[in-house]
Image (cartoon, rainbow over the protein chains, first blue to last red):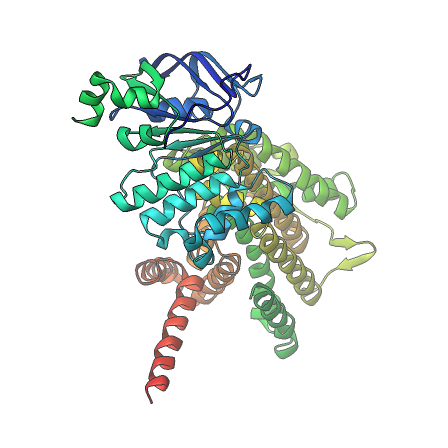
Length: 247
Length: 319
C-alpha cells in the first residue's frame, strides 16, 4: 500500500535534477526536466514508448551526456562525472532488458556488481542478503547467467545492482517482457527493498503497477515532465487514467 | 582444474627435451613455438577477454626486438636492461595509443590497428640509420642473465619454455582477478560494464598495454635468440598469424591460445615439405577447423571429448 512520502521535512533531497536536457545529435530528447528524490522514497517516472524514460536514466548515470541543467546527488554536482564515478558515489542502475553477462556465472555477475567495493566482509553479507531475497539465484549460483529465464535474469540484474551498495537504485522498466505473475513478484521485491530503506527511482511503462507501489510519480511525455504528484493522486487523475491506465 | 592444466603443460614442456634430446622439432621449432605462445597468450587477453581486435600486434613484437637489437649492439647495454627499455617503450606507446584507438569498434578498430602495424613496419624498413633498413641488423649478442649466457638450442629451449610458462601463469591469474572479470564484462556489454562502475576505457587500456608488454618481451627474446632481426619478422602477415593462433586455439582460453600457437607453428613447419602447396593446405586446414570447430581447436576438442565421455558413461550406466 502506498504510504505518505517519508521524511518530507528533509532539507536537501538525495537527488536533485533541475533544467536537465539531453540530446541525440540535433534532436532534443529531454527538455528541461526537474526532478527530486528524497532519501527513503520510492519514486516512479511513467510514460509511453519513446517518451525519453531510458534517456533520462542514462543521463542521470552519466551514460549519456547532459545537454544542459544540473544533477546534484548527495550534495555534489555530478552532472559531468563519468559513469564509473557516479556508480562509486552510489547511483546503481538496473538496465532495461536486464543486460546480465550471459557467459558468466550467476555469482560472478553478482560479484561484478560489487566491482567498486573493497569491503569484502560487506560483499559477503550482501551476497547472502541477495540470495535470501531471491532463493532461486542461490540455487543457480554456479550456472551461466544466460541460461536463466527472463524473470530470473531480472532478479539477477537487481541483485547485481544491490551489490553496488546503492544509495539510489535506478530501475529501468523491470516489468518488460515478463509474465504478469513475475511482474507481481518483482514489484513485491521492489517494495520490500524500499522498506529496507533503499531509495528507488523506478521508470516504467506499466504505469498502474508502478504508481501502485510508488510514493510519488512523474509523468513524462515526449521528453517533458508534464505532471508530478503523489502516486495516489496520479492514479485518481482523470487525464492520467485515460492516457496511461486505459479506463 | 586450472592448476592441473598448468602442471600438465609444465610437465610436458619439461619432459619433451628429455624424451627427445637434440630433436629438431623440440629444440628448434619448440623455441619458435614458445615465443608464439607468449605472443598469443598476450594477444588473447585483448581479443579473447577484452573483445578488442588488433591486426597490428607484430608492431609491439618488433619494438621489443629492435630495442634489444639496437641498444645491445650500438650502445653496448646489458641485455636485461635493453629488454626492460623495450618493454617500457612498447608499453608507453600502447598506453598513448589505447585511448584514441580503443574508442573505435569492430571494423574500424581492425583498420586502425592494421594501419599502426603498417606504419611501424615502414619505420623499420625506412629508418635505415637506426634499424639497418630492409637488410636488418646482425651480430646481436646472446642474452645474458646475470652472468649466465644463453647460447645453444638447449639453453634457449629452457629459457623460452620458462618465459612461456611464466606468461601463461600471469595470464591465468589476470583472467581470474578483479581486472579479468572487468574485462569479460566489457566484452559482454560495455554499457552494462559501466553500470557496474567499471571504467571500460581504463580496462581496455590495461588489456592493450599488457598484451603489448607480452609481445615486446617475446620480441626481445627473439632478437637475442636469432642474433639477427629484420623487418620481415614483423610484417602484416605475422600480425595476422598471431590472430589466427588465438582464434584457432579458441578465444577467451589461455590454454587455447597457447595450444593454437603451438599448433600453427608445427603446422607451418610441417607443411614446408609441400613447398608450393604450403599456403594452399594451410588455408584449407584453417577453413576446415573454423567450419567444424568454430570455438577453436582447444575449446572445441575438449567439448567433443566431454561429449564422448558422457556418451560412454551413459552406455556403461545402461548395462
